[in-house]
Length: 107
Image 1 (spheres, rainbow, N blue to C red):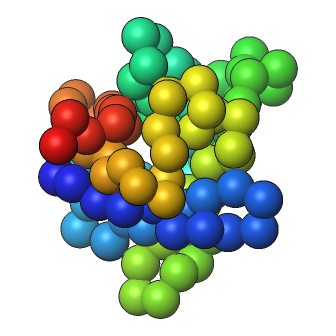
Image 2 (cartoon, helix red, strand yellow):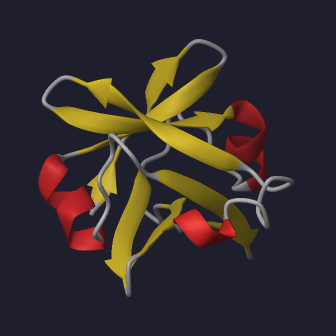
């Protein structure tokens, strides 16, 4: 699915509708997610309760309420590592096996 990022303070937000989060099995009120970058692709997965101590040195984010859905704040540094210019570029995201992957759209 193609989307534009929305500006938010000194970074950007990705708006996610409730059905998308349900597909991932995430309760945005309670869940935290882990950011990981591989080959200019941002991989986002839920942090399970029993691993919270193991990921404290990683980039872990919470969801913020945005309209009728939820948003994930993505800092400018992450956007730059993905080689995305949010003013011009679209992003593509997809869900596979409860992982959300985000990359720069080719067109």
